[in-house]
Length: 301
Image (cartoon, rainbow, N blue to C red; front, side):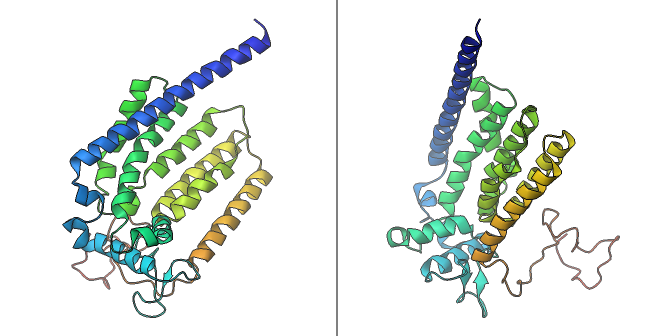
């Protein structure tokens, strides 16, 4: 068999495998969309239900931030709302209003308005993308069976760690983490190729405009790819420094444009009250180890 024939066979097999992945992703999107429409009332999905009109706790904060932002004029930095809170206002990154979704809703406000929240659309989109993101990860691991890819994707959609985040819409974007893991596995498995951590830049860009927690988690996955590349000598130190510098420049520019370097006083919140908060190791709740007598004794643990 000639080298050309072998190449054609390999390309044909790869195309066939990618077609299976595409079929699995399409089926996952259709199945999850049908289940969501059947499960949730139409008023819930279009933002007109009582749940969205009279929100409570975190959901209320997310909706208020988004509503003020969409109704306000375009400003610079992009995410600052002078009329929300005391002067100089608030950055909607602090209200967990999903800046990337808020920016899209503001561009469409002439059609969509500002009274209907965009959170149900975002959550619906997160559910649709969760399954395909998991299927891509399974594909990278060598799974080629369409049924297995679909089943794996459905398991990812119905996992409690995603469903439990329902009240925190931004953190429903866990498909970004699955795509990050898929990218890491691809780099780890492709031992004959150079590691290029710049591939993480689009994911980090989107995660930064969704929630800082997701950005931090993706950044950790990126660092794992960087260290793995250095360990296997598929990434040189100068190349790693150059790519990190490029990513830092792009991310810093986005943060500057969004006003993340001029947040002003951060509103008081129990940032250490939850073990999942990024600041919990530095601002822990009252404990026998750290003491923290200055904190209220009735603070949630």
